[in-house]
Length: 150
Image 1: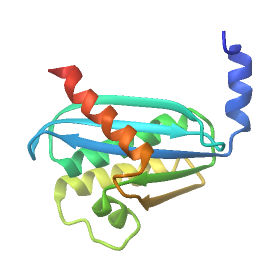
Image 2: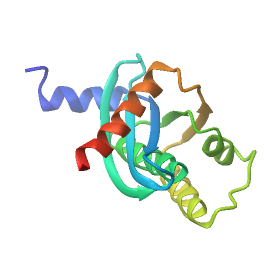
Image 3: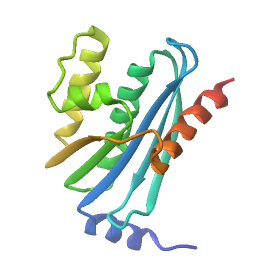
C-alpha cells in the first residue's frame, strides 16, 4: 500500500501548482478521436494520466476536449495554479489571445475552457514541440483511447 486516504488528502492540499500535458488525436480529420492527459505535481512526478475515446471529431476539437478534461481532473487536486502544455499551436494561441476563434464549434469549446479556468487562480498555456517526452506520452494515451474503442 502506498499510503492512506488521509495521507493522500494531505498531499493534495499541500500542492499549489500542477503541470498538465494534453493531446488530441484523430484518425482522419474528422475521424475517430481520442484524448490523452498527463498531470504532474510540482516535482515533475506524473500523478495522473487519462485517456478517452471521444467519438468522431477533428484534431482541433480533440485538442480542446483534452484540455477541458484535464482542467476538470486538475480541479480534484485543490491547487491554485495550473500550467498547461500542448503541441497545438492554434489552441495555445487562441487561448493566449494571439488568434481569434473563428470556428463555431471551437468557439463553444473555447468558452468551456474559460469556464474551467475559473476553478483556479491562475492558468497558463504554452506551446511545446511534439518531441517533448510528456507530449509524446499524452499522444500515446490519446491513440490508446481510440484503440480501446475499436
